[in-house]
Length: 285
Image 1 (cartoon, rainbow, N blue to C red):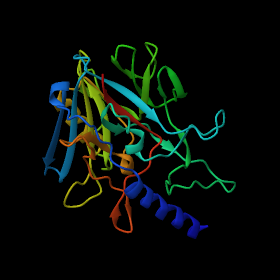
Image 2: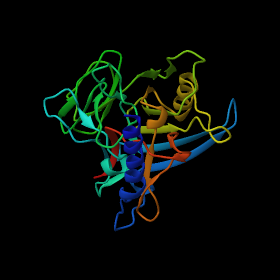
Image 3: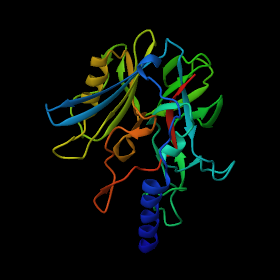
């Protein structure tokens, strides 16, 4: 069984590194003209960290959020998505950027053990609200803070829906609420992903912090992540799935989708991009 898992992992690495061709936009696109700004901020206190920041102008209506989910492997069954290369999920020609979103997990076997080798096509359970085009693949779950967008692209954060979601994701918990930090100091440091917005809901911030890479980026605890989001101008922000799932993609100057951060997953010492059940994309209208 271990040999089988090793073979699956090798195939996964090969699939992700070799067969997932970069998306290319034929006509060059000026992201700043569409209201998208990327910043890579390096910090040294209290530890080395590399912070990847996407600032999205929602007010302009030039771009729109769109959730992309992996295939549903069993229809009405318990699995909600199959793990896919995030670059493939974000391969639509209108996609300008993407990040990871919801937490998720595999299903236990007959002995109650879960396979967490994370291979392409693996059926998983998405935690929290997840859906696109008004169809929810996964429902609201207790303890998960949802991030959703209505028909006009307006963003909402919370545990209860106040409008019908068109595009929906979920994270773990609010880390900034009403302009204040809502998590305690301390705690473990990991790679992190967060989504936040200003009080008027006109700007969306997508943030990925690299981690588990000594000398480059150690990762952050929730209080440190919340401080980053508040300093950006967030009135509200949510901690999304992190660890090896944290990833950010953005079109480069050549119109190709480029992974902007350094995911922490490794296979035989080589960095690999973890397959995911879904991503939040930013598309050109």
